[in-house]
Image (cartoon, rainbow, N blue to C red; front, side, top):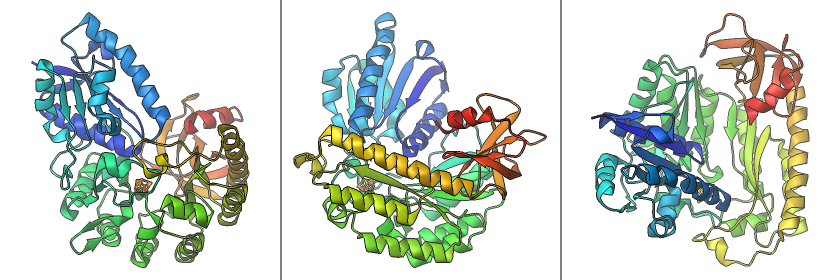
Length: 445
Ligand code: SF4
């Protein structure tokens, strides 16, 4: 009998890709995906542990979902992903209604684990040094963009981060398998491939490095764009920069996490680069790829961050001129090295700093987007905005959201759009009604 699966995903794109992997595995074992938890035989949450807030949300959701078990005791409630790996048995203690706890390296045996969980609470949290799921076919959601995990785990051990502890050590998929996945995505009608990895540019399969992977993927017919996230600055080789510059399908856009503009903070974060080295890298990228769009991740309020350190981050953001940035307040994660250090920046001060930094970045993003007004950008059409079927959105080569009036275009078409206006978050094509400004915020959210 077909069993019905309800799957919710939290956290980053790696988790989205892992959910597609789990779904592929379970569909192969006779499961069918349903939209509502109250229709499911198996309820799975694929979780994130990167911030405390993410864990609290999952606990809240588990409380709500537990009621399905009260009404239908045969339902299996499972927790997968980084939070499962991080908390292990503690999760079963805190939420006794949970039947299954499975970490990121346990998905191959998911059908058997669910069977076991029907009998007794089951824990599968052993990390692997070799598991890459290279032979499993993900069941990808519809859309224009296919996420392809080309490596798993991380060897960097930044002091604030628990990823190496919950996702294990770095290992890459065989190159043949990566290319097969790109070809498969093209055959399924996807127009863009995004290579994923915690340190995606550390990819290596024997002699094949990240640069060669880009070059080989560039030759796959049917795919219009190839992106990747997130590279680590220390792994960005000259060869990789050349490949980004020369591969026709790799757009001029790189997300390059900085985290802090202060060398002292970078050192305590164990980011393995100085501000000067990072800026040399930015210069190389800009020389090789004129007009390249850069985005970044930043943390404010790291232990020991002084006012001067924070000012250094503000100056770095101004100097580099990112198109956009993900900015977070530091919060200690049990298990990470920095969690043992005293917090020196009170929450109120973190709030002040993040507000200043977000405002500064917003002004820069607006300036950058306004510079595009009057130009024509190539947009990969994704579909209607939330507010109007007549106005569609998609991403430009620079990965900016663009809204444009819909005419004949189909999802996946490359459309030339003349930019008439800009907000900090998006570009508006000629002919878009001003009301679409609000829609832009919807699309971006
Ligand atoms: S590079 Fe650092 S921040 Fe990124 S996943 Fe690895 S340890 Fe975490």
